[in-house]
Image 1 (cartoon, rainbow, N blue to C red):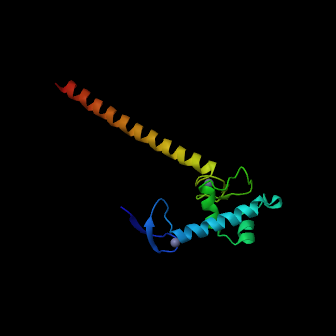
Image 2 (image 1 turned 30 degrees about the horizontal axis):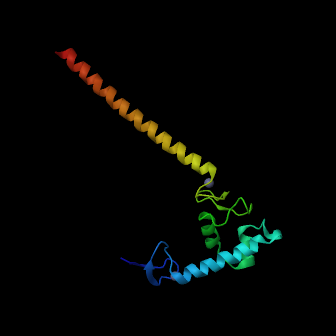
Image 3 (image 1 turned 60 degrees about the vertical axis):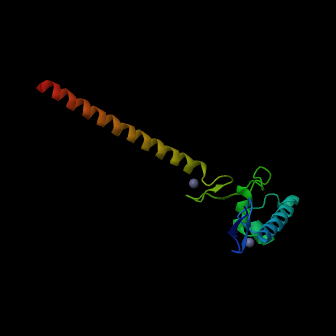
Length: 138
Ligand SMILES: [Zn+2]
Ligand SMILES: [Zn+2]
C-alpha cells in the first residue's frame, strides 16, 4: 500500500517511498548537490568553507549540512566542510555533537549509572541492617 505524506520541504502531498520529500524537491536537492559538487571539484574551491559555498552557489546551508550528514559530501575529500556542534557550536564534520560533548554525555551517563548502583547498594545494606536487628530481638 502506498503511503501518502506531506513533503517536509514544500508541504505538497505525495506518495511516500523512502524519502521524506516529494519528487520535485528531491530533484531540486539533486540539482543543488550537483551545483555544490561541481563547485567543490574545482581545485581552488576544494578548501571552501560552508559559508563560502553558500555565498558562491546559493545553496542553503541547511542543505549542505544534510549532504554532509548523508555522507554525500565527504569531509575527507573537502577538509573545510564542517558545521556546528548542536551543543557548543564547535565545528564538526560528522554526527550531531563534537568529541568533547560526546564525551561529556558519556560521562554524565556513567555518573548516573554509578549513582543508581550506589543507591541500590544502600537500600540493600539498610535492608540487611533491619534483618539483623530483628534477629537480635528474638
Ligand atoms: Zn516537496
Ligand atoms: Zn560540542
